[in-house]
Image (cartoon, rainbow, N blue to C red; front, side, top):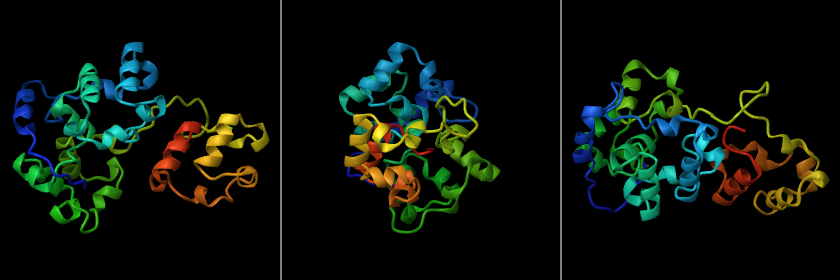
Length: 242
């Protein structure tokens, strides 16, 4: 996982303060707002999530899609920490439910009594540091995890919704995820904004756009796109599930 040169966090101390109000499944109280669809948030919460934390409806509605969710509390700017606090997080709940301690060094996991949970999921110091392969649990859906693995995942604040990156975007269609209707619009009928982003960020031209499935980028998964391509895809309405 990610490794940064930083002082040891005070999470162990903060976690103790939460135990009295923790959910039975998790070591901390679950911040329910993060598991509510964007369209169900009040306008104030939407404004805070957008202006202070950088969320847009698509990235809120799919866990792990927003760039900010790759950061531990210690990496948030003052504005971001303030926004997170307004929405009900603090250092302990953010690091568990959003970062899942991914910004911690292995030694910090050990010191904060978190490493046992990750070891139960098959991690060790070498794989955490990216020096060896990730454990098989990383390729499993929630229902494929053993009871022991699910229990361990709960201890680092994973459960079905955020482990499987459940899609909360509105979907009235027949497909499991919302159909990106714009992708089936001919190039010469696209808006100038979509056409410009598709061309400059994703490399489309009229031929590759109008012949669906022939462009090499469409054989790739969202997670393998570079940062410019991801941003462009999100701008025109694509995301990891579509």
